[in-house]
Image 1: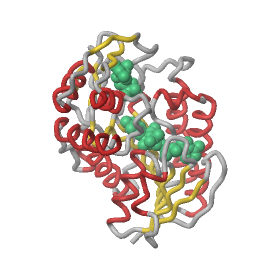
Image 2: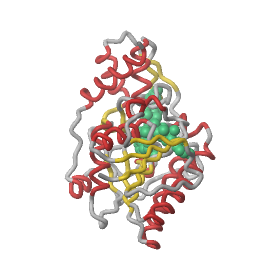
Image 3: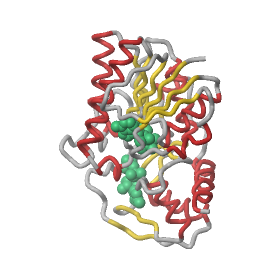
Image 4: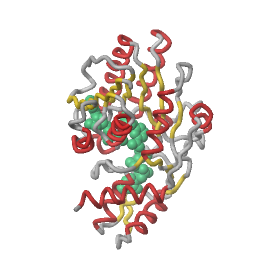
Length: 311
Ligand code: NAD
Ligand code: UDP
């Protein structure tokens, strides 16, 4: 049994991680400022003596005695992270400094939820961990991309300078139950639109690609990375290499929901990456991990979740 701190624990991914770690018998402190997360995501854990929910903003220091820290606090959808771009950078950078400082003081292992966005609009395909990326440092996505890149730099420097035991995971597009229905991400947008019979909004021609990973696969990869010995620090790509165009995703969602929705095209947001696909050879090697949930199975579970929310 370990004592584990999860920042951003009431968000989409954090809530699945809290549930899984509690189910495995650990003590969990879930820290969140509820900007995009919600108590509803962890309501089933409230009252469990091994679960604590703390309202706190990671831009301020926090102290707790724990064995492991998962640093997930940061809005992840473009709509939310662009809402207050300065706050997004502060969350990534000051949140990383505060959590790394804590890890250093208490000698905890710390995992950073980084992102495929560190590769920007990639000119190398698929992306492996040695690729440095193609990021616009002054664009509308840079508050998120550069914030996360700076957090990775801080993790590496705390490791080199202070011997902090770090792990960096680069998460590719992930979906599943507990996604925020209005966060503007493509999977939640399409499902909500299909269930309500509204037009499906394709940005640009819909030929840009993404690789979608179901949240259970991600949680397994994250926990395996945390469990590796101290020599494995990453970064490690964790994602599903099955690549689809956004148009194909829209067609799947319409078919699985038996929806009458049509399609409309809207302008492609600036700096929107044209293609993205993880090279997961390193995760296979060091974590003995690969995703097991197919898109159709994951979408079906996610559609069920959104259907129940509607009722
Ligand atoms: P989310 O928005 O659902 O969760 C983020 C959580 O962090 C929320 O509960 C939010 O309230 C909390 N938070 C935000 N700012 C905070 C602050 N200053 N202090 C304390 N809490 C704060 O997003 P998610 O999809 O669950 O993403 C979790 C992490 O995984 C993020 O760091 C994100 O960058 C990373 N990630 C997610 C994806 C994805 O596809 N979902 C892909 C790559 C990386
Ligand atoms: N997208 C879309 N319609 C939507 C929302 C998103 O066509 O209603 C597109 C978006 O332009 C991008 C892709 O879907 O090319 C994935 O967008 P998302 O915001 O989910 O994630 P990210 O761009 O960060 O990968």
